[in-house]
Length: 494
Image 1: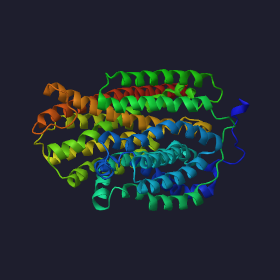
Image 2: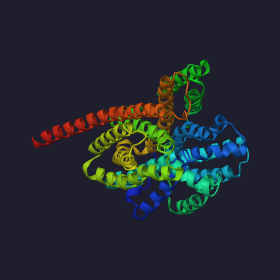
Image 3: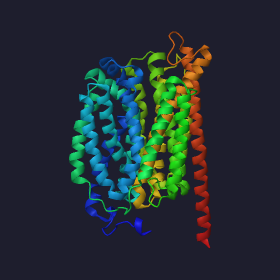
Image 4: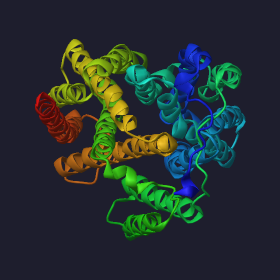
Protein backbone atom coordinates (compact mmCIF):
# COMPACT_ATOMS: atom_id res chain seq x y z
CA UNK A 1 0.00 0.00 0.00
CA UNK A 2 1.22 3.53 -0.82
CA UNK A 3 0.12 4.82 2.59
CA UNK A 4 2.52 2.44 4.28
CA UNK A 5 5.49 2.84 1.91
CA UNK A 6 8.70 3.15 3.94
CA UNK A 7 11.39 5.74 3.34
CA UNK A 8 14.55 3.81 2.56
CA UNK A 9 16.47 6.21 0.31
CA UNK A 10 19.48 6.04 2.64
CA UNK A 11 21.61 2.97 3.22
CA UNK A 12 20.73 0.65 6.08
CA UNK A 13 22.53 0.89 9.40
CA UNK A 14 24.22 -2.44 8.74
CA UNK A 15 25.85 -1.03 5.60
CA UNK A 16 27.21 2.06 7.39
CA UNK A 17 30.75 1.37 8.71
CA UNK A 18 30.65 4.33 11.13
CA UNK A 19 27.48 3.05 12.84
CA UNK A 20 28.82 -0.50 12.91
CA UNK A 21 31.93 0.70 14.74
CA UNK A 22 29.71 2.28 17.43
CA UNK A 23 27.07 -0.45 17.63
CA UNK A 24 28.23 -1.92 20.98
CA UNK A 25 28.40 1.53 22.58
CA UNK A 26 24.87 2.17 21.31
CA UNK A 27 23.83 -1.13 22.91
CA UNK A 28 25.25 0.02 26.26
CA UNK A 29 22.99 3.11 26.16
CA UNK A 30 19.97 0.97 25.28
CA UNK A 31 20.77 -1.49 28.08
CA UNK A 32 21.21 1.22 30.71
CA UNK A 33 17.69 2.51 30.14
CA UNK A 34 16.28 -0.99 29.73
CA UNK A 35 17.73 -1.86 33.14
CA UNK A 36 16.57 1.34 34.89
CA UNK A 37 13.06 1.34 33.46
CA UNK A 38 12.52 -2.33 34.39
CA UNK A 39 14.20 -1.92 37.78
CA UNK A 40 11.82 0.91 38.70
CA UNK A 41 8.88 -1.45 38.31
CA UNK A 42 10.06 -3.58 41.26
CA UNK A 43 12.55 -1.56 43.33
CA UNK A 44 9.81 0.54 44.95
CA UNK A 45 8.13 -2.48 46.59
CA UNK A 46 10.69 -2.71 49.38
CA UNK A 47 10.44 1.03 50.11
CA UNK A 48 6.65 1.05 50.48
CA UNK A 49 6.68 0.53 54.29
CA UNK A 50 9.00 3.54 54.71
CA UNK A 51 7.01 5.69 52.26
CA UNK A 52 3.76 4.70 54.00
CA UNK A 53 5.15 5.67 57.40
CA UNK A 54 6.59 9.02 56.31
CA UNK A 55 3.51 10.05 54.29
CA UNK A 56 1.03 8.45 56.75
CA UNK A 57 -0.52 6.24 54.06
CA UNK A 58 -2.36 2.95 54.23
CA UNK A 59 -0.86 -0.06 52.45
CA UNK A 60 -3.55 0.13 49.76
CA UNK A 61 -2.76 3.81 49.11
CA UNK A 62 0.98 3.20 48.97
CA UNK A 63 0.57 0.40 46.44
CA UNK A 64 -0.52 2.97 43.86
CA UNK A 65 3.10 4.13 43.70
CA UNK A 66 3.89 0.75 42.10
CA UNK A 67 0.59 0.20 40.28
CA UNK A 68 0.55 3.60 38.56
CA UNK A 69 3.96 2.94 37.02
CA UNK A 70 3.02 -0.47 35.60
CA UNK A 71 -0.36 0.74 34.35
CA UNK A 72 1.11 3.70 32.47
CA UNK A 73 3.77 1.55 30.80
CA UNK A 74 1.23 -1.01 29.61
CA UNK A 75 -1.26 1.65 28.51
CA UNK A 76 1.28 3.68 26.50
CA UNK A 77 3.77 1.14 25.16
CA UNK A 78 1.85 0.10 22.02
CA UNK A 79 1.26 3.74 21.10
CA UNK A 80 4.96 4.58 21.37
CA UNK A 81 5.91 1.45 19.44
CA UNK A 82 3.69 2.57 16.56
CA UNK A 83 4.88 6.17 16.92
CA UNK A 84 8.46 4.89 16.67
CA UNK A 85 7.66 3.20 13.36
CA UNK A 86 6.12 6.46 12.08
CA UNK A 87 8.42 9.26 13.33
CA UNK A 88 11.50 7.16 14.09
CA UNK A 89 12.37 4.65 16.81
CA UNK A 90 15.57 6.46 17.78
CA UNK A 91 13.86 9.85 18.09
CA UNK A 92 11.19 8.40 20.42
CA UNK A 93 13.86 6.56 22.44
CA UNK A 94 15.94 9.74 22.88
CA UNK A 95 13.03 11.76 24.25
CA UNK A 96 12.01 8.82 26.42
CA UNK A 97 15.44 8.95 28.08
CA UNK A 98 14.95 12.61 28.97
CA UNK A 99 11.37 12.21 30.26
CA UNK A 100 12.30 9.17 32.38
CA UNK A 101 15.24 11.02 33.98
CA UNK A 102 13.15 14.12 34.73
CA UNK A 103 10.43 11.90 36.23
CA UNK A 104 13.03 10.20 38.44
CA UNK A 105 14.21 13.58 39.72
CA UNK A 106 10.67 14.68 40.54
CA UNK A 107 9.85 11.39 42.32
CA UNK A 108 12.54 12.04 44.92
CA UNK A 109 11.20 15.55 45.61
CA UNK A 110 7.56 14.41 45.95
CA UNK A 111 6.31 14.96 49.51
CA UNK A 112 2.72 13.75 49.03
CA UNK A 113 1.01 10.78 47.40
CA UNK A 114 -0.58 12.76 44.49
CA UNK A 115 2.80 14.31 43.61
CA UNK A 116 4.61 10.99 43.87
CA UNK A 117 2.03 9.15 41.75
CA UNK A 118 2.09 11.99 39.18
CA UNK A 119 5.89 11.84 39.01
CA UNK A 120 5.75 8.06 38.65
CA UNK A 121 3.34 8.44 35.73
CA UNK A 122 5.79 10.82 34.02
CA UNK A 123 8.65 8.44 34.74
CA UNK A 124 6.62 5.52 33.30
CA UNK A 125 5.79 7.57 30.19
CA UNK A 126 9.52 7.89 29.46
CA UNK A 127 10.11 4.23 30.34
CA UNK A 128 7.43 3.10 27.87
CA UNK A 129 9.05 5.19 25.10
CA UNK A 130 12.41 3.47 25.64
CA UNK A 131 10.99 -0.03 26.22
CA UNK A 132 8.85 0.13 23.08
CA UNK A 133 11.74 0.88 20.75
CA UNK A 134 14.96 -0.57 22.19
CA UNK A 135 14.56 -4.04 20.66
CA UNK A 136 13.60 -2.57 17.27
CA UNK A 137 16.72 -0.38 17.28
CA UNK A 138 18.92 -3.39 18.09
CA UNK A 139 17.33 -5.47 15.32
CA UNK A 140 17.78 -2.58 12.88
CA UNK A 141 21.43 -1.90 13.70
CA UNK A 142 22.98 -5.29 14.41
CA UNK A 143 23.74 -7.77 11.61
CA UNK A 144 21.94 -11.10 11.70
CA UNK A 145 25.03 -12.93 12.96
CA UNK A 146 25.20 -10.78 16.11
CA UNK A 147 21.53 -10.07 16.66
CA UNK A 148 20.95 -12.95 19.08
CA UNK A 149 23.86 -11.83 21.25
CA UNK A 150 22.66 -8.19 21.27
CA UNK A 151 19.02 -9.06 21.98
CA UNK A 152 20.30 -11.49 24.59
CA UNK A 153 22.02 -8.66 26.43
CA UNK A 154 18.80 -6.62 26.34
CA UNK A 155 16.90 -9.63 27.71
CA UNK A 156 19.53 -9.99 30.42
CA UNK A 157 19.12 -6.41 31.58
CA UNK A 158 15.32 -6.72 31.49
CA UNK A 159 15.36 -9.74 33.77
CA UNK A 160 18.17 -8.31 35.88
CA UNK A 161 16.16 -5.12 36.47
CA UNK A 162 12.95 -6.96 37.31
CA UNK A 163 14.56 -9.48 39.69
CA UNK A 164 17.27 -7.29 41.31
CA UNK A 165 14.82 -4.57 42.42
CA UNK A 166 13.96 -5.82 45.93
CA UNK A 167 17.52 -6.64 47.03
CA UNK A 168 19.10 -3.50 45.52
CA UNK A 169 16.26 -1.33 46.83
CA UNK A 170 16.72 -2.68 50.35
CA UNK A 171 20.37 -1.63 50.39
CA UNK A 172 19.61 1.86 49.04
CA UNK A 173 16.69 2.52 51.41
CA UNK A 174 18.67 1.34 54.45
CA UNK A 175 21.75 3.40 53.60
CA UNK A 176 20.36 6.58 52.04
CA UNK A 177 16.54 6.81 52.24
CA UNK A 178 13.64 6.09 49.92
CA UNK A 179 14.24 9.16 47.73
CA UNK A 180 17.47 7.67 46.45
CA UNK A 181 15.80 4.66 44.85
CA UNK A 182 14.69 7.26 42.27
CA UNK A 183 17.70 9.57 42.38
CA UNK A 184 20.07 6.67 41.66
CA UNK A 185 18.75 6.97 38.09
CA UNK A 186 20.02 10.54 37.67
CA UNK A 187 23.79 10.06 37.21
CA UNK A 188 23.29 6.94 35.08
CA UNK A 189 20.54 8.65 33.07
CA UNK A 190 22.56 11.81 32.42
CA UNK A 191 25.60 9.82 31.29
CA UNK A 192 23.43 7.66 29.00
CA UNK A 193 21.68 10.75 27.57
CA UNK A 194 25.03 12.43 26.91
CA UNK A 195 26.37 9.36 25.09
CA UNK A 196 23.08 8.54 23.39
CA UNK A 197 22.40 11.94 21.85
CA UNK A 198 25.91 11.88 20.36
CA UNK A 199 26.11 8.24 19.29
CA UNK A 200 22.58 7.29 18.22
CA UNK A 201 22.18 7.87 14.47
CA UNK A 202 19.29 9.56 12.67
CA UNK A 203 16.28 7.40 11.84
CA UNK A 204 16.30 5.86 8.36
CA UNK A 205 13.14 3.73 8.26
CA UNK A 206 9.72 5.33 8.80
CA UNK A 207 6.10 4.53 7.96
CA UNK A 208 4.01 7.12 6.14
CA UNK A 209 0.73 6.61 8.03
CA UNK A 210 -1.49 8.43 10.51
CA UNK A 211 -1.80 7.65 14.20
CA UNK A 212 -4.64 5.25 15.04
CA UNK A 213 -6.63 7.55 17.37
CA UNK A 214 -9.48 5.17 18.23
CA UNK A 215 -7.11 2.32 19.05
CA UNK A 216 -4.93 4.70 21.07
CA UNK A 217 -7.95 5.52 23.26
CA UNK A 218 -9.44 2.03 23.58
CA UNK A 219 -6.26 0.24 24.63
CA UNK A 220 -5.56 2.38 27.75
CA UNK A 221 -9.19 1.85 28.84
CA UNK A 222 -8.67 -1.91 28.52
CA UNK A 223 -5.43 -1.76 30.57
CA UNK A 224 -7.04 0.42 33.27
CA UNK A 225 -10.01 -1.94 33.64
CA UNK A 226 -7.84 -5.08 33.57
CA UNK A 227 -5.26 -3.85 36.09
CA UNK A 228 -7.92 -2.44 38.40
CA UNK A 229 -9.68 -5.79 38.43
CA UNK A 230 -6.52 -7.87 38.91
CA UNK A 231 -4.77 -5.72 41.50
CA UNK A 232 -7.76 -4.56 43.56
CA UNK A 233 -9.21 -8.07 43.43
CA UNK A 234 -6.31 -9.23 45.61
CA UNK A 235 -7.46 -6.82 48.34
CA UNK A 236 -11.25 -7.16 48.29
CA UNK A 237 -11.77 -10.53 46.58
CA UNK A 238 -12.57 -11.51 43.00
CA UNK A 239 -16.22 -12.20 43.77
CA UNK A 240 -16.90 -8.52 44.46
CA UNK A 241 -19.31 -7.12 41.86
CA UNK A 242 -17.00 -4.15 41.16
CA UNK A 243 -14.08 -6.45 40.40
CA UNK A 244 -16.19 -8.70 38.18
CA UNK A 245 -17.53 -5.58 36.41
CA UNK A 246 -14.00 -4.27 35.80
CA UNK A 247 -12.81 -7.58 34.34
CA UNK A 248 -15.93 -7.92 32.15
CA UNK A 249 -15.43 -4.33 30.94
CA UNK A 250 -11.78 -5.13 30.13
CA UNK A 251 -12.85 -8.15 28.05
CA UNK A 252 -15.50 -6.15 26.16
CA UNK A 253 -13.20 -3.20 25.44
CA UNK A 254 -10.43 -5.55 24.29
CA UNK A 255 -12.76 -7.29 21.83
CA UNK A 256 -13.93 -3.90 20.50
CA UNK A 257 -10.27 -2.84 20.22
CA UNK A 258 -9.45 -5.95 18.15
CA UNK A 259 -12.52 -5.33 15.95
CA UNK A 260 -11.44 -1.72 15.32
CA UNK A 261 -7.81 -2.66 14.68
CA UNK A 262 -8.79 -5.37 12.19
CA UNK A 263 -10.68 -2.81 10.08
CA UNK A 264 -8.14 0.03 10.35
CA UNK A 265 -5.79 0.58 7.40
CA UNK A 266 -3.00 1.73 9.77
CA UNK A 267 -3.77 0.08 13.14
CA UNK A 268 -1.85 0.72 16.36
CA UNK A 269 -1.60 -3.05 16.84
CA UNK A 270 -0.62 -4.78 13.60
CA UNK A 271 -2.62 -8.01 13.96
CA UNK A 272 -0.98 -9.46 10.85
CA UNK A 273 2.16 -9.95 12.94
CA UNK A 274 0.36 -12.74 14.78
CA UNK A 275 -0.13 -14.66 11.53
CA UNK A 276 3.53 -15.54 11.90
CA UNK A 277 3.40 -18.62 14.19
CA UNK A 278 7.06 -18.11 15.19
CA UNK A 279 6.29 -14.61 16.46
CA UNK A 280 3.05 -15.60 18.21
CA UNK A 281 4.51 -18.64 19.94
CA UNK A 282 7.59 -16.72 21.09
CA UNK A 283 5.41 -13.93 22.51
CA UNK A 284 3.20 -16.46 24.34
CA UNK A 285 6.11 -18.40 25.86
CA UNK A 286 7.80 -15.14 26.91
CA UNK A 287 4.60 -14.14 28.71
CA UNK A 288 4.38 -17.51 30.49
CA UNK A 289 8.01 -17.27 31.68
CA UNK A 290 7.49 -13.80 33.18
CA UNK A 291 4.35 -15.03 34.95
CA UNK A 292 6.38 -17.91 36.45
CA UNK A 293 9.35 -15.71 37.39
CA UNK A 294 7.18 -13.19 39.18
CA UNK A 295 5.62 -15.98 41.20
CA UNK A 296 9.18 -16.55 42.47
CA UNK A 297 9.77 -12.82 42.89
CA UNK A 298 6.76 -12.50 45.23
CA UNK A 299 7.19 -15.70 47.26
CA UNK A 300 10.99 -15.83 47.72
CA UNK A 301 11.35 -12.73 49.97
CA UNK A 302 8.72 -14.06 52.39
CA UNK A 303 10.21 -17.55 52.44
CA UNK A 304 13.81 -16.43 52.98
CA UNK A 305 13.03 -13.82 55.66
CA UNK A 306 9.93 -15.11 57.47
CA UNK A 307 10.48 -18.88 57.23
CA UNK A 308 14.28 -19.24 57.07
CA UNK A 309 14.70 -16.18 59.34
CA UNK A 310 17.41 -14.59 57.20
CA UNK A 311 18.09 -10.87 57.55
CA UNK A 312 16.90 -8.66 54.66
CA UNK A 313 20.48 -8.21 53.45
CA UNK A 314 21.27 -11.95 53.57
CA UNK A 315 17.97 -12.78 51.89
CA UNK A 316 18.78 -10.20 49.22
CA UNK A 317 22.20 -11.74 48.57
CA UNK A 318 20.66 -15.22 48.31
CA UNK A 319 18.03 -14.00 45.83
CA UNK A 320 20.74 -12.22 43.83
CA UNK A 321 21.93 -15.65 42.65
CA UNK A 322 19.10 -15.52 40.11
CA UNK A 323 20.20 -12.33 38.27
CA UNK A 324 23.92 -13.07 38.70
CA UNK A 325 23.59 -16.43 36.94
CA UNK A 326 21.39 -14.79 34.29
CA UNK A 327 23.99 -12.10 33.62
CA UNK A 328 26.57 -14.80 32.94
CA UNK A 329 24.39 -17.20 30.94
CA UNK A 330 22.15 -14.95 28.81
CA UNK A 331 24.87 -13.34 26.63
CA UNK A 332 26.44 -16.78 26.07
CA UNK A 333 23.03 -18.19 25.16
CA UNK A 334 22.38 -15.28 22.79
CA UNK A 335 25.74 -15.73 21.07
CA UNK A 336 25.18 -19.50 20.81
CA UNK A 337 21.73 -18.96 19.28
CA UNK A 338 23.39 -17.01 16.43
CA UNK A 339 25.35 -20.19 15.59
CA UNK A 340 22.99 -23.11 16.28
CA UNK A 341 19.56 -21.48 16.24
CA UNK A 342 17.21 -20.51 19.06
CA UNK A 343 14.66 -23.32 19.25
CA UNK A 344 16.76 -25.89 21.12
CA UNK A 345 18.08 -23.32 23.63
CA UNK A 346 14.61 -22.03 24.54
CA UNK A 347 13.40 -25.60 25.08
CA UNK A 348 16.43 -26.49 27.25
CA UNK A 349 16.00 -23.32 29.31
CA UNK A 350 12.36 -24.09 30.06
CA UNK A 351 13.13 -27.68 31.09
CA UNK A 352 15.75 -26.34 33.54
CA UNK A 353 13.18 -23.86 34.90
CA UNK A 354 10.61 -26.63 35.42
CA UNK A 355 13.15 -28.70 37.39
CA UNK A 356 14.18 -25.67 39.48
CA UNK A 357 10.59 -24.78 40.39
CA UNK A 358 9.77 -28.35 41.36
CA UNK A 359 12.85 -28.17 43.59
CA UNK A 360 11.63 -24.89 45.13
CA UNK A 361 8.24 -26.52 45.74
CA UNK A 362 9.92 -29.17 47.91
CA UNK A 363 11.64 -26.71 50.28
CA UNK A 364 10.57 -26.46 53.92
CA UNK A 365 11.39 -24.49 57.08
CA UNK A 366 14.65 -26.35 57.75
CA UNK A 367 15.97 -26.62 54.19
CA UNK A 368 19.76 -25.99 53.90
CA UNK A 369 20.61 -22.52 52.57
CA UNK A 370 22.94 -24.13 50.03
CA UNK A 371 20.06 -26.17 48.58
CA UNK A 372 17.86 -23.08 48.34
CA UNK A 373 20.71 -21.32 46.54
CA UNK A 374 21.08 -24.20 44.09
CA UNK A 375 17.42 -24.05 43.05
CA UNK A 376 17.49 -20.23 42.76
CA UNK A 377 20.66 -20.38 40.65
CA UNK A 378 19.08 -23.07 38.44
CA UNK A 379 16.08 -20.83 37.90
CA UNK A 380 18.45 -18.09 36.77
CA UNK A 381 20.24 -20.57 34.51
CA UNK A 382 17.01 -21.64 32.85
CA UNK A 383 15.84 -18.05 32.41
CA UNK A 384 19.20 -17.06 30.95
CA UNK A 385 19.10 -19.93 28.45
CA UNK A 386 15.53 -19.02 27.43
CA UNK A 387 15.33 -15.21 27.29
CA UNK A 388 17.99 -14.29 24.74
CA UNK A 389 17.09 -16.83 22.03
CA UNK A 390 13.38 -16.15 22.55
CA UNK A 391 13.86 -12.40 22.07
CA UNK A 392 15.79 -13.18 18.89
CA UNK A 393 12.92 -15.37 17.64
CA UNK A 394 10.39 -12.61 18.38
CA UNK A 395 12.26 -9.97 16.39
CA UNK A 396 13.99 -12.00 13.65
CA UNK A 397 11.10 -12.36 11.18
CA UNK A 398 9.63 -8.83 11.47
CA UNK A 399 9.80 -6.30 8.58
CA UNK A 400 11.92 -3.24 9.35
CA UNK A 401 8.90 -0.94 9.19
CA UNK A 402 7.21 -2.90 12.01
CA UNK A 403 10.15 -3.41 14.39
CA UNK A 404 8.91 -0.68 16.75
CA UNK A 405 5.45 -2.14 17.24
CA UNK A 406 6.88 -5.70 17.47
CA UNK A 407 9.29 -4.60 20.21
CA UNK A 408 6.51 -2.79 22.05
CA UNK A 409 4.28 -5.90 21.91
CA UNK A 410 7.12 -7.92 23.41
CA UNK A 411 7.61 -5.37 26.20
CA UNK A 412 3.86 -5.05 26.80
CA UNK A 413 3.43 -8.81 27.16
CA UNK A 414 6.41 -8.86 29.55
CA UNK A 415 4.87 -6.19 31.80
CA UNK A 416 1.43 -7.82 31.76
CA UNK A 417 3.19 -11.08 32.64
CA UNK A 418 4.65 -9.39 35.72
CA UNK A 419 1.20 -8.28 36.90
CA UNK A 420 -0.39 -11.65 36.14
CA UNK A 421 2.48 -13.39 37.97
CA UNK A 422 1.93 -11.25 41.07
CA UNK A 423 -1.80 -11.98 40.88
CA UNK A 424 -1.35 -15.74 40.40
CA UNK A 425 1.17 -15.97 43.26
CA UNK A 426 -0.78 -13.96 45.85
CA UNK A 427 -4.20 -15.36 44.94
CA UNK A 428 -2.95 -18.97 45.03
CA UNK A 429 -0.93 -18.44 48.21
CA UNK A 430 -3.74 -16.86 50.22
CA UNK A 431 -6.38 -19.26 48.85
CA UNK A 432 -4.40 -22.29 50.04
CA UNK A 433 -3.57 -20.64 53.37
CA UNK A 434 -7.22 -19.69 53.92
CA UNK A 435 -8.37 -23.23 53.12
CA UNK A 436 -5.87 -24.73 55.59
CA UNK A 437 -6.65 -22.15 58.31
CA UNK A 438 -10.43 -22.35 57.92
CA UNK A 439 -10.73 -18.57 57.61
CA UNK A 440 -9.79 -15.78 55.19
CA UNK A 441 -6.03 -15.15 55.32
CA UNK A 442 -4.32 -12.25 53.52
CA UNK A 443 -0.92 -12.29 55.21
CA UNK A 444 1.53 -14.38 57.21
CA UNK A 445 0.05 -16.01 60.31
CA UNK A 446 2.36 -15.86 63.39
CA UNK A 447 3.57 -19.26 64.62
CA UNK A 448 1.98 -21.05 61.62
CA UNK A 449 4.78 -21.43 59.04
CA UNK A 450 3.02 -24.59 57.84
CA UNK A 451 0.24 -22.46 56.34
CA UNK A 452 2.68 -20.39 54.27
CA UNK A 453 4.69 -23.44 53.22
CA UNK A 454 1.54 -25.20 52.01
CA UNK A 455 0.64 -22.18 49.90
CA UNK A 456 4.23 -21.77 48.66
CA UNK A 457 4.37 -25.39 47.50
CA UNK A 458 1.20 -24.96 45.44
CA UNK A 459 2.45 -21.64 43.97
CA UNK A 460 5.73 -23.17 42.80
CA UNK A 461 4.03 -26.27 41.40
CA UNK A 462 1.68 -23.91 39.54
CA UNK A 463 4.61 -21.93 38.12
CA UNK A 464 6.35 -25.21 37.20
CA UNK A 465 3.19 -26.25 35.32
CA UNK A 466 3.14 -22.90 33.50
CA UNK A 467 6.75 -23.42 32.40
CA UNK A 468 5.95 -27.02 31.40
CA UNK A 469 3.22 -25.75 29.06
CA UNK A 470 5.75 -23.30 27.57
CA UNK A 471 8.28 -26.15 27.25
CA UNK A 472 5.78 -28.33 25.39
CA UNK A 473 5.05 -25.46 22.99
CA UNK A 474 8.75 -24.76 22.36
CA UNK A 475 9.42 -28.51 22.02
CA UNK A 476 6.78 -28.65 19.30
CA UNK A 477 8.38 -25.60 17.65
CA UNK A 478 11.83 -27.23 17.78
CA UNK A 479 10.50 -30.49 16.33
CA UNK A 480 8.65 -28.58 13.58
CA UNK A 481 11.78 -26.58 12.70
CA UNK A 482 13.89 -29.76 12.49
CA UNK A 483 11.27 -31.46 10.33
CA UNK A 484 11.11 -28.44 7.99
CA UNK A 485 14.91 -28.43 7.74
CA UNK A 486 14.97 -32.12 6.86
CA UNK A 487 12.33 -31.56 4.14
CA UNK A 488 14.40 -28.72 2.73
CA UNK A 489 17.53 -30.89 2.70
CA UNK A 490 15.63 -33.64 0.87
CA UNK A 491 14.40 -31.16 -1.76
CA UNK A 492 17.86 -29.70 -2.27
CA UNK A 493 19.36 -33.18 -2.75
CA UNK A 494 17.24 -33.78 -5.91
